[in-house]
Image (cartoon, rainbow, N blue to C red; front, side, top):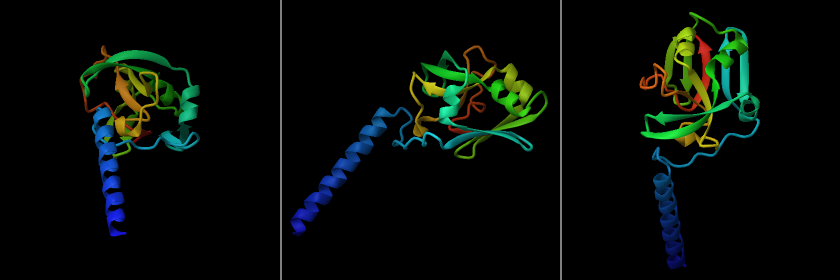
Length: 169
């Protein structure tokens, strides 16, 4: 009986480490896969004072979007993103001009600047990469990006992955 348990355990360890290794090789970000959010789970919030707008992925997909191709500076390759201009989210809760805006990621990384700076930099909220959802472990499900022509295209501090909130400080 002990031999069978040891063989099963060895098989489980081999299978798990093969999966993890294979997943890491297929993931350019180098970490294991994380399950996506539920279809109606709130993944993103935009707020200014008492005004708040909450988004499930399904709501984001219903918003007017466009597709842009950019040089992704972290992976150092060209990719296509489905995006919504950040200013569209600002208008939903009255963010404007000199409002100090904080973008907040799942890992609590925060990048702050004025609303007018984000707008003049042409900030986008990316909701898909290469036509599919962006996995959490690859900077999704949404992220803040900039076009190649943006003044912040190479300002890596401003790029915020796994974005969960935009709020006025």
